[in-house]
Image 1 (spheres, rainbow, N blue to C red):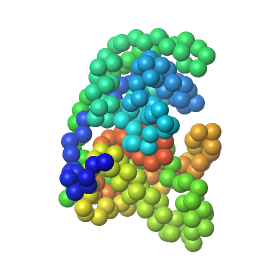
Image 2: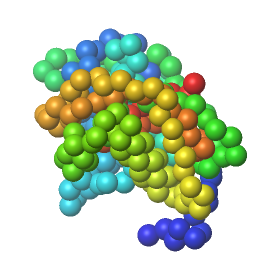
Image 3: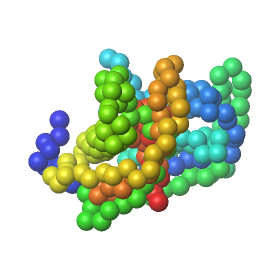
Image 4: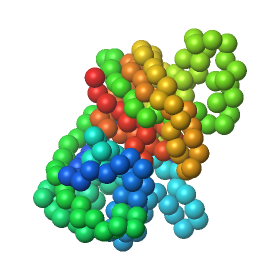
Length: 229
């Protein structure tokens, strides 16, 4: 376990994004993920499982969709692994569910971002966010009006950022500030076969977050995507 007293409050994080030319419907994203896992020989970075079950470590490989184009985001060692396994223009034959597909790599982007507590306030959008579990959903449903509901969601968002920071071995000695500016319910989003209430929102925070990372539940599969504004 990392000693929090020795953990930095900010760090430079390595990211890599592989985007494919193919068009896939959203319901095919889990099948795309399965195909990538098979192609990489079951590398644990790509599926976040361990011998004893599921790993709750922040996922270093995350599966995204941009205008129905599948993509893979790698973070830190995940970014290093993507750079070694994928190149622009590469064609990869695989199975997406029951059909054979030739995946064509459109682009491979590689960059670093400073991440952590900042003296500035940063603006973000968060898409396909799943903030509510069984416990806080009951609290959300029983809240007395929109202001209390917004307070619950802001508290959850702070917790999601803290979970990301912990996964990156960062420790924040200062208070995290998050203010949701706008929010809309996306209707039910499916997570492990269960429909959950999803949201899209814009917010401001004193934490500098990397572009495209996922926050919250199912962060590895196109949920809670952070977009810089």
